[in-house]
Length: 197
Image (cartoon, rainbow, N blue to C red; front, side, top):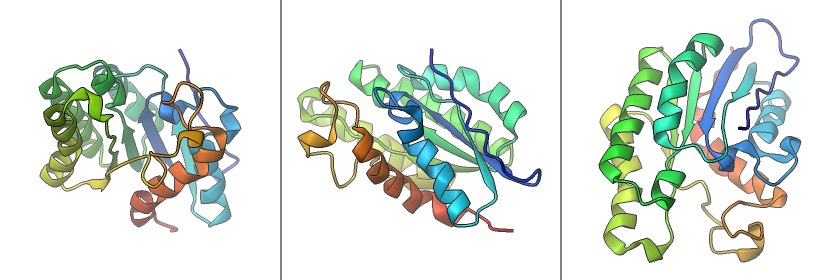
């Protein structure tokens, strides 16, 4: 089990950003300081945003597992923003999309109930999972973001998903060099939620 909480040398007034994800956010196969959440910590500091990053992403995590861990994490970190980066493992395992949607729905509701702003990071599946399943999988994120009026970044791999050398040998996990591309995608949805004061 992987757990990473990036505790920066921020001021006591610093708010927190909670990242709830799977191996794509846990830095699987690379040094942790190279992962996009670690790069996010650096960018926040460089650009003067007073936030610390609490990354509770775990390799292999599903939406069900994330939901079970969220409530205590919200109590512990009291985040101002919750970044939800789950669903890929549900899809790769072919789990029922209704189950994934219900779990993500509950995750978003918990985040909002804690008075946090929520950012959903969408994922897409390879076409070999079938046209209907892949389309409905992708649409789940859009529908939930619209329903709950939360921020959405539709695809974490936008701009490099078709580049084989952007991924490790397993073809699933981005390389260290691709983490900056992932951060740029996350930043697009995250920056409007940030406050400097």
